[in-house]
Every structure is written in C-alpha cells, then in structure tokens.
Length: 331
Image 1 (cartoon, rainbow, N blue to C red):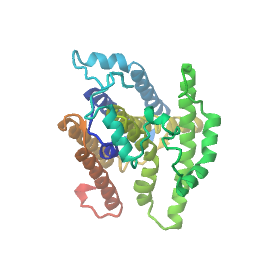
Image 2 (image 1 turned 120 degrees about the vertical axis):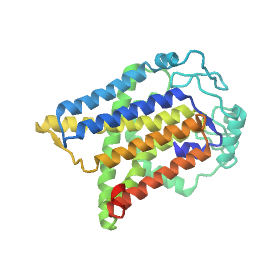
Image 3 (image 1 turned 45 degrees about the vertical axis):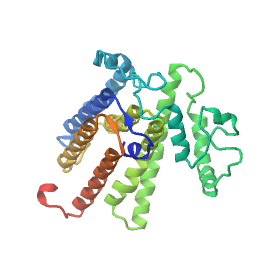
Image 4 (image 1 turned 90 degrees about the horizontal axis):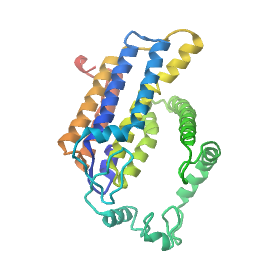
C-alpha cells in the first residue's frame, strides 16, 4: 500500500467500504489464528475451520457487489469514465482526468509517448508500450531470458483467462494452478534463501524479515502498484490486505490440515512469540486504517511514507528482539 501511494503520480481517493471490509476480515483472520494456536497444538478440526473461514471470505467476495451496494443509501462516487470497479462499487474520482493521468504515466516512464489503449498504439507502439525504434536494454534481455523457462511453464499449465469471455470453471482452474505454482516457487525460494544465508553467515532473522519477506511480497506489491497507477486505489488496497487473509486462513490452515490428516496427530506450534507478534499485527492494522481514515480515505505520498516507516520500525523491532537488545517490556 505504501509503494502504491508513493509511486503513483496522483493522490488516489478510495472508498471506505472495501478497506473496511478487508480490514474486518483481516482482523477476524488474526483472531482465528490466535484461537487456533493458543494451546500449542493445531488439530484437524481447527485447521479445517481456518480453511472454511477462507471459503466464507470467497463466498462474501462472490456476493460483494450486492453487499457493498447495501452499505450506503445514496453515497455513490463515480469515476471519470463512469465504469464500475471490480470491488462491486463505482470507482472514485481521481485528481487528474484520463488524458492527464496518461501523460503522467508517460512522463513517469521516461517520456515515452505510448499509452496503452490510446492513440499511441497507432503510432508505432508495440503491445508492451515501447515504440518501434526503442532498443531493449541488455539487462532487460538477460531478465527475459532467465524468466523465459518459467513463462513457458506458466503458459503451458495455467489457463489464460484474459482473452475474451471464458467459462467460470476456467477461472477456478486458473486460481488453483496459480496457487500451486506459488507454493512450489515459495518452497524453493525459502530453501535457497536459507542455504544462501548459511553460506554468507547471515542470521536467519535477517534473511526472514528482509530477503524472504520482500520476495514473497513483491508479486502483491507489483499487482497493487499496477492497478494503482491506473487510478484504482480500492483495488490496490484490497489486493494488499486480502493477500494477508489468504496467507493466514489458507496459507496456514491448509498445510496444518493436510499434516494433521496425513500423520493423524495435531501439529505442534511454538506459541512463545504469539502474544508480541499478535499485538504488533493488530497495532499495524489499526494504524493503517486510522491513517487512511484521517487522510480522508485518500492514498497520498505522506501516507505512503508513513506506511514505509511502519515497515522499517517492524524490521528494526524484529532484529533488536532477536538479538536481545530490547527492554523487557518491549519484547
């Protein structure tokens, strides 16, 4: 969310309903996680309840348009193009009109005159937004070459739901296979990062709150940034907070459920850090919502800077706590 606010060339106005919905589900997820691990053991029933909780979240989102429309009687803010957002509400006005926003994006990209979906496409622009005379940087070519095997694997296994109308089952297959790929890639990323930390003699905590945390959050951050630069602040916030709901309810609940069913015994969980980290999560959630509410439900650069500050405070707290440099009341 902080990156979306800082790197978007306009101040994004957001609706209070989606962020309230997502923060509420995030709060319920944290409470459910704490209730599940409070005794140090997670049973199959408790894990199944977390998974069912995510199912309830998905069901809510499936009926999101109807529920959101009932939350207010006459408060309907419109976007400049009058279209409806994916949150089931009409997108809100942003400070620049379509042409100015396109120009801002163009200038931010280095002055290129190509704007996706605009007149630039008939001006020698390709599908990636580059003009026909633009040269591909060497580091970009290397990046494309390294990512090509994964791109081909994704194209071969994950259905493409972006081209034309598709059947609902295809969306489900796309979601399930995407989650599967995320699991596979996350496993190797953690293993390789741990091995690299051992080789370079970097403390596991440092690797966890920096390299691993950043690596697992980059896809969410990029997704939020891309939609924010299109003027959809609600979608950017929902993507960032909703991913945490997924991480807690399904990211923890499903592995615990599978493990307890396979081995026939509860999963042991270390609860020594539950209280301080739960307090930190709840405090962060309150500060995020309060900052956005006090800012008039607008994502501005000062708010983005405040969110980045919160992250750096969290990293500093984790490291100081790990190396026993905090006062007793702070740990």
